[in-house]
Length: 256
Image (tube, rainbow, N blue to C red):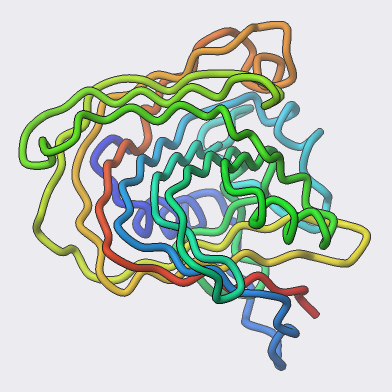
């Protein structure tokens, strides 16, 4: 029943069906830490399932994973390739890969909220600024993001490989079907609890084109990711998307 849901619809439906009440937004704004501008982006999103006990073991108790079916909770794998500009600096081509648990929005904001388990980026400045706030961001300059150039109007093969020094290592590969038709705006908020507080990574996309994908994650069953998903492969039966957007802004703040 979940295969055709959008990210917005999935989070709202899960909250209603499984009793995860959406909190009311708290008063006051979090203090700004830094901003990132993204442009000329391609992005894949996959939402799959992992044993709830494994997800809870990586999620602080104040963040509530979204349950899907008994004993299984939703986890999200995001890959993106963009021009990245940190703190107003000149934009550089780079890649980002994120894995985390889909959670009930802690402050009631966003179309989807996720708790960050792993964050990888080829952009050294972005990794450094996140690390300064205690986020376990990895500067993985060897991420390989392969998508045939000039073919964003037809079905295409996507391959994203997180290699050393990334840890845990894995790949996401399959077929994507781009769309050039805008689907409105989108706001995704990723969280991580650190010594500095609750870090809130809020990315707002003013115009996004959303289309379909068929992807599989592959990893070593013995590494931390394999232990999370309970094996060496992960499919995405809930949501698979391939997205295009020309610009986005990420505000990284410390939540009150």
